[in-house]
Length: 310
Image (cartoon, rainbow, N blue to C red):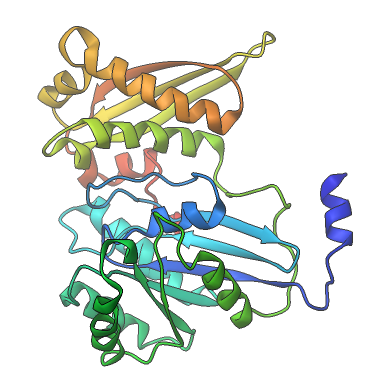
């Protein structure tokens, strides 16, 4: 009933809506930026490259409009089928949105990866914003040379310096985006912040903890599948998930000595899942070995990395 009342207060003649993709190299802070825009966590964050593997939609709604953001995997040189899926999935979004946010790290010089993306952006008529992210980590005087370097490469519709971590210029970014969007309908209810089912987000939250705690090559070799979420009559949510690795040695590392690592993963993941669901949960984790799953189409499809998704 609350959503209906809110919708009645919105002027359909001025309400702006549209789709916006966040594009960039790995580790430029796209996911942190999106979580800051939404005011809550819907996409996982890690300092490991290629953390985001799927397109993830985050929905921002206020009285004046609704922006559906698409967080994409970082553009990189793929080394396996999973990597190709990630890059193809990210690049496919530029042809299906109203606006592109090209996100770069202010501390990194423009490189081949950026120029690869810019070459693709030249093929579309969609407005492109340059988002200079992580400005909290540099002196303001360092911004102008970075902006100048990128503007020599491409004619950006807007340039917006931001800090996804500190929230600098986030409201300015939202207002500028709205000025480019058409008058349109509200696609999702006011209180919906993502289009992904809770199974997907639970799996991602567990994978985030593996990324945070595991070392070396393990983060890239891990997938997580949420098998079942049961809500009991007593209000407790029973959640069962499987962590997939590629080698037996990796399974041993994930489990840890006397189960210490998997207990820590479960404990940290449970906190975030409880925030997501708003309920106390029981979380049970298993670890399975699926050799070289990142190069096997059937396994990629089983774990949600499917070409039908883009």
